[in-house]
Image 1 (spheres, one colour):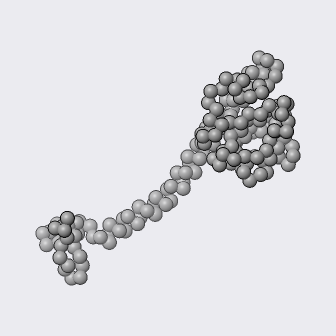
Image 2 (image 1 turned 120 degrees about the vertical axis):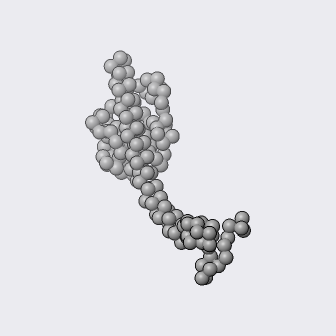
Image 3 (image 1 turned 180 degrees about the vertical axis):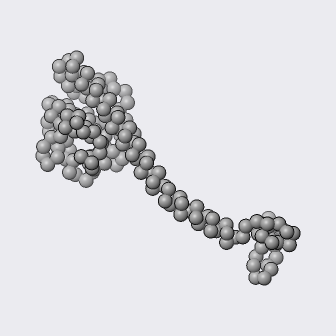
Length: 167
């Protein structure tokens, strides 16, 4: 390994990858390599947060789509039986995990009104609630609670599906 180091010429340490060394080889100086690494670090620092936002947006879209599918299954159950299911298991829905790794939450508001999601004390649905607890995995019944801001909800009897923060 030491054989790769060259002698100090003009107070500059030459490595085997430096330009203009004794054998006419060309390469990059240590300063140039450090600059390239620094540029790559800056680009990575910019790209990683953008990538994370993109991934989170894709997860929210996926959760919204699944909530819509659950809504259709619950509606079909209602059409067949005349009542809403008591639990998500009653509709034989297989994919109960959201993209964040948490279970989707289903509440039959007619049976358990105290468990209904609310905004300023008013229920957001009069039939049933379906929601994902979002990336933080935490939630509260009130949509005004900060822990609910990243939840993905069904509101206004299905007229709105998306993030609480956009509702």
